[in-house]
Length: 224
Ligand SMILES: *Cc1c(COP(=O)(O)O)cnc(C)c1O
Image (tube, rainbow, N blue to C red):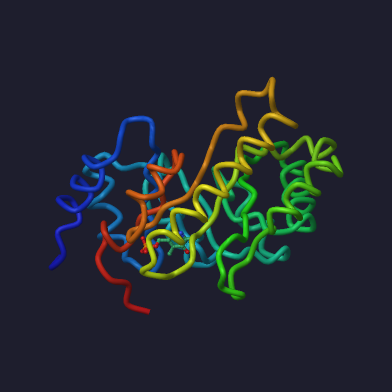
């Protein structure tokens, strides 16, 4: 292995405070690199494609905690629901319903995050802040007893403008606090704020993130 995954993982871990969960984003990286991180103690990994995740899940240690972080088509939900620990990228009510339905079939409760769309890019998936507010007000989620909404996830704009990135993270934090106060005041399980990637996680942590999704800094550049 040319790239020293273990020392890069250590550097990222050392830069995080203890209450921040590090999700090692291993998409497009081989099992060998994932195992290097695993041997360094990392257990939470994130993938964004169902088939790649299925292959890795089958061939890697069973105690790995897998997070799904990519756009998930409803017809793929049933394949990951038996083993996924968290689906961070829930971007529609239709997807929520499907996760709930498939989880009910096998008697599981799946942790999910609601993906926000705050960034300027039109390509990004997720609920706008208003759509997110509406989702919680509508209340259909309360009947979905096989999902548990753990918090919010978002990606900032892909820009060098630090003030812009900071302002987007702070918008997410404010929305989290609002939704927490309005709908989860008595529910400690709504407590996750997943923002921050390789380029911007230190800023994210200053803006209330407690779950960062870091790929490139740990595993090196992805070869697509
Ligand atoms: C790929 C990806 C990441 C990791 O990005 P890096 O820049 O490699 O750290 C984080 N979150 C999501 C949703 C991703 O798709």
